Length: 401
Ligand SMILES: Nc1ncnc2c1ncn2[C@@H]1O[C@H](COP(=O)(O)OP(=O)(O)OP(=O)(O)O)[C@@H](O)[C@H]1O
Ligand SMILES: [Mg+2]
Image (cartoon, rainbow, N blue to C red; front, side, top):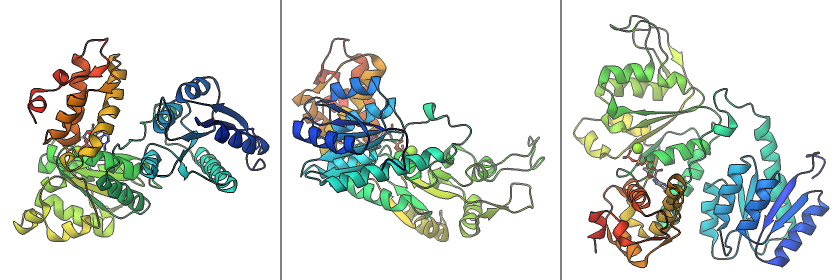
């Protein structure tokens, strides 16, 4: 392993079981690593703050932090670190979730030595390959947008993760469906981040926000003098997304003339700018999203059937939050962490009655509405508050029962 990685790599092993720590320390010290060990999350973060970390091997469940929290914090300090989660029998779903938060891989306990050696070796090789690939000029690694992290381990979300995993590698067009606020844009970003195009552009366009003529020039660009005000030629979003991913949000709202042009792009990957005659070829992965009933729009002849088929090659449908209330505790914890950090608050637990109310409310605005409710609660809480009590919830949620 050393030959392919001549600079000594530092590994951090986090596990509350001393025998696992000792075993991994002995194994990887023999392989030439500098191995640091921590018995809990707190110690792990102290070590991560003072050492370079190339590889993290963390247990999933520990007394203070979860493995996913350790992973996220270590990744903030060392974005290129190759993180591997190990997990006891029965927690494999959360381990799958960990891979959606940036873990390279996960292993189920008991694992054998060769298996973990193989996973670490592959992870480091992949990291080296990624470091060798030049980054796009605008995206400085330090300030690059963090990978979106999808929270939730309900069976319905597991299905979504599996579809993302399978679809990400291909160029096939994906149509993301789901009510408002269910996470459609997050899925689109996740598809891009997990695809071979992840180091190229991800361009999002909201098709509902723009009138017809503007939408057309926004998507396909225009030549100089194509219309009044077109003082110079301009690239459209398709050109800007070349080699990357174009996310067309609210696709159900695009007017018929733009539908025709879009259909042609999806058939030939070629178009002309508005006012132009020169065909422009692009290599774009298209992801579309809608919360509209597209089948009804097709039946009502408002949406072209041929375009519908072209878009709907892989469909990912996000479940409404009320159909996966088992995810609410995890989501609440996630948003508490986010808004505690932004508002210098320390709410660490959720009152039993608060949780009951949160799980009884139907959440018409789905995860976005839940996120807003938690942000509101955190902002309105007294600085010393440690428990999310029912009085911190918005009225409609408090009155749900
Ligand atoms: N599974 C999830 N885990 C964490 N955050 C989530 C999840 N799903 C949604 N969110 C958060 O909820 C908010 C809404 O998500 P997003 O914008 O992706 O929804 P959407 O389906 O595109 O909504 P709309 O139809 O209104 O455009 C975002 O802040 C997003 O980060
Ligand atoms: Mg959206």
